[in-house]
Length: 291
Image (cartoon, rainbow, N blue to C red):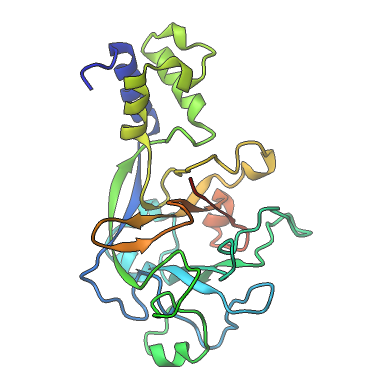
């Protein structure tokens, strides 16, 4: 860090100042044994037995990768500015196919919503705490905690710990260059004018940009992290998906392997500010990439 030119260090600090936001940071808590209505990654999902369970295009049942108990999130004071619904359950499902339910064509329906044939974001406005795991499991959905599960990015069922944490825009976010140029001008680094952020910094400065800004990990309402590129970057029609609703990163190590998206990738779910405010989760951009 001491080898970073002063102008670059000041620019990094200004990017932090300009982009800093509080978001919900999520980590796996192996000591927790989640119940059917708890926030968790994987396992048998909570389900309202009066509703049809979500299915893929081939009619197979979708698999839960994550659910967030919003009753608990709100009671713990972790719903940032009330942006998420104030009660209920938010869930993320994918198909058990070779691409984890992703649609690479990003086709839209007649109302301009992205078609969600092989994934789903489901919001239950209220939770029936009397429903049992056995009742729901009888529907026959895939279970990431099953010993014979194959082709799943989530390996098991895990309780979660969540906290509000400051985060910053990462270099792969399509909006990063705007922040970079604004920060460089603010600290008087005129040489950055018109330059790419990657070409303007020294090797040490580039390393610091990644180490200090890149928002890897599991998040809600934070900045996205990518191993390749931002799927919104080259398409104006996708710019409306300005809110990262949820990010699930690969999560593994020497002692435990929890999540792996392809070759150490990451999954992102985006929504528009308008739809989030309306608690309408029908139009979500889902993408994952890997190294």
